[in-house]
Length: 458
Image (cartoon, rainbow, N blue to C red; front, side, top):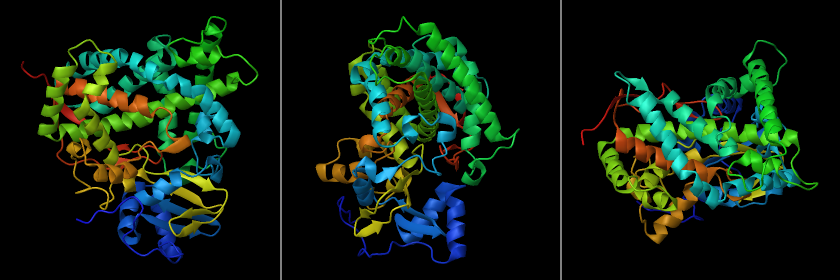
């Protein structure tokens, strides 16, 4: 198969991007993208290519899935786009002070306060905690199972435990179930089609329930801040202490701290749970993959955990990368152009919503051999030319100054969890069919991860 470099294209570029023509085709594709995006992206990419345009009236959109175009897009200055727009429905729950709906100087300032908490030394210090929480999950919820179980809620609780330990230390461990309940209405609301997420004042709706639970979550965070205020130290191992200990006029306000905490709980919870579920499904469906994960884990994880642990789990890291390539937590992410921006030989006009898609880039046949096959080995020691092509096409966390702030924590958590799971149990999936993705903002496997569990005889 001919493979292209990161700046080449299969067909001559024109001044007009391909896409549906006529109102019926346009509305049909738009409805699919904003309600059931994966099949809509597959169909549109097959017909128009991985980068295409569509529009209805004043709403113009460009979906960018070509890896070469993505590299160009994600390297553009932040001030070429804005994130506080009508398609960023996350703002309703995470709050207007959240870094992920902020633009310009406010984004840089808010992210700058949170970023040091994800330094390598902090990440390394969390390795033993992640393994301990994974063992707790296995011992309490997986090994005791005598029938087929759904691992999705089990892994969801594990992810919540890790997130709360990172944010609060052990301060809120006893409130995991309560916080899970408070986060669930937001998950349900954000899984709806975009049309159902539009602002409205109606009570007794999913939006109203999400608003109510956000208020309850604010009260919980306020109580925790009040308990710690005055005793928080800047070198504390958890994020909330470090934010409260900051001094100076530029420090985050209490409202901003609340919004960052809710953002990090939500982003670290739903997206990582989805990714963990897809990783478990993909690895458990391939007995050879599971066996190789186990062999590596037995050679690495029986030693005292530390910074060296992650470096030695090379195959587990490859399994995670391959699962994220095929099933990124977000199939596209919107930003709005605030000026005309170039993509290849095209120009995206000011005001256009740009939906960049790691899902399409991860399945691009010009970047990946046999792109729909789950082959972790493709990430192990590729030659330099192949590495350059695939690195450009692997963007589940984005790239540049808006890259997911917790990407390293998420990859570490997924790697350690799948390695420990493979080391300790065997999984027989209920179905040989890979489930359909479900969800608008975060895509998770429909029906969860249903499997029969057995403990290997050593």
